[in-house]
Length: 113
Image (cartoon, rainbow, N blue to C red; front, top):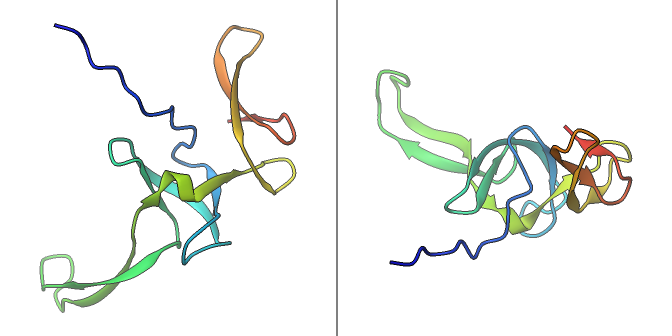
């Protein structure tokens, strides 16, 4: 039996990265990536795409009511912010002097930690 190959490209954005939304309702907003959902190809960005959600009373929230929280956005709608220049950039991958694969900003050439 043959194995299925993963047709999706490598996700180049990771948790903790600074990103900017490039399209949609939240266009132009910047924030830190809180979570990456690999299978759904979505990211959760801090203070971006905030939605109102109705909740029932529970142990955490005795009152219940309407709670504001971030909703995930598709990975194609965000771009990494270059750590050196502060502008959006594409992400490349290359090997460093130790042979380890690292990400780098295509605009400045800066290695992304």
